[in-house]
Length: 140
Image (cartoon, rainbow, N blue to C red; front, side, top):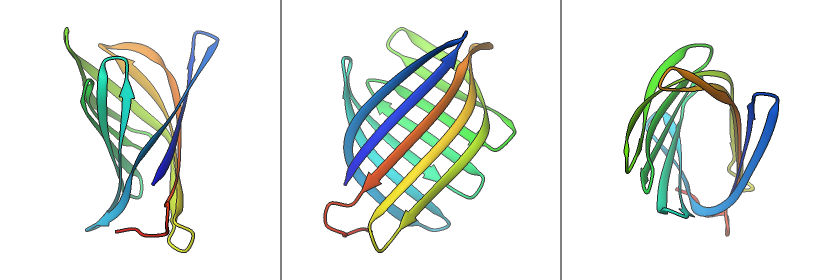
């Protein structure tokens, strides 16, 4: 599965866009949908799992970066972000949680917008757009 990840960060009247591509898979399990992918960074490989429910999302990252970030619409939720030099407490308030998957075409998208804080300091508003497409219309 081909995955395009675009993160737009709004902070202090500045806008930064980070785009990357990855490969992975989308699957359904119990009452949730999951998108799993791996990306390469300067610090090494990062594995990401995005668990999607109606008004809740959980983003888990492991490898070069370790992160646990739950998102609930309009509610502040605590998480964690770990780097080689230490672990940090995070907080996020989701302003938008949208996602869909078309089983016929094998295409889907996730759009999340959230206010993000690191160690109690506002780190910006993040707009995360993930689009994905099955290579050959095979999915789990």
